[in-house]
Length: 229
Image 1 (cartoon, rainbow, N blue to C red):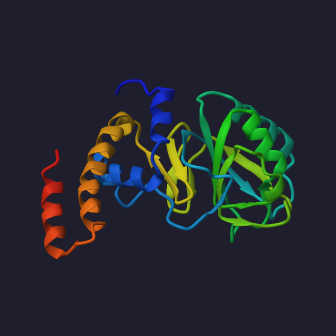
Image 2 (spheres, rainbow, N blue to C red):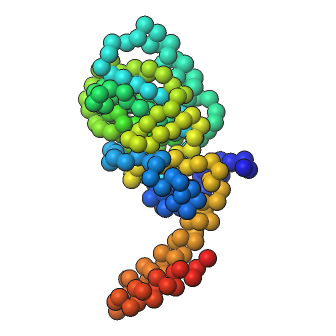
Image 3 (spheres, rainbow, N blue to C red):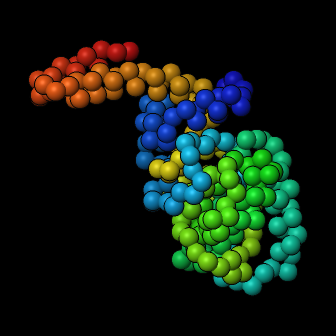
């Protein structure tokens, strides 16, 4: 597998996440029903798509702070400041039900953006929507007012965000529709697959949008699309 470049990740931001998922059906068919979020998420500050290396953490807001909570948080911030970049933080809220206390708001969105993190995907709760850091994209499970006892329990371990399992340094793509993990071995071939898919769809869409569209034109367009290789 050739080295993944920042330009490879930037290139994938040209397409929305559903388009990436469609391409993954071809590039990595064994992942057709895994690797993506399966519940609607609240989008905050999301304008287009984000693609980056995964940084992970687990949090809780219902229990009083651990004795070493400050040390864990300090180590967490050092972790997210490290390479690889660009990065996206995936945080699993372990409360049951999730979303009792907000780890994310004005302060943490600003801190993470300043440390080179491009965005966030979490099943947890966020707040401070009017003070949210400009340029920091986020998908969250809910919106709420309090941070309660929210603390980082651990980081750099596997997380599960509504069915999307991810580990440190994986590659994630997300937009307002949701998020998906991209296997590293297919990153470089996705653009070619996407372009071919778009060419095929263009044939069908052109027919569907014509004023004299009918079932015969649909069938002809579908046949023409299949001939594109």
